[in-house]
Length: 125
Image (tube, rainbow, N blue to C red):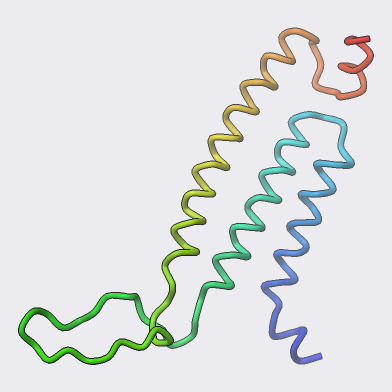
């Protein structure tokens, strides 16, 4: 039980993912689906950032300069910056996707005068 409580952040991410997944699958409004997709993506980004964190680790910058004695660098003492950089890229992609999808939703609304999926499908038949 203590193990489950100690990993509370993972339970929060799972809850956020399921809220986003429900919004994408269960809702009929296109804007609600889009917001659900954004919540799902945000939960994944938070998950990957939290798994890359290490307690007691420092940033991967070697402190000594030129001419000083070179000591062995242990990878376990440093935080891996790659997951954080990848998640910054994912945030940029998420915002871009959101903007393009919102523009498409605006065009759909101008054409069909509704954002409900069922009514749009009826109008296209």
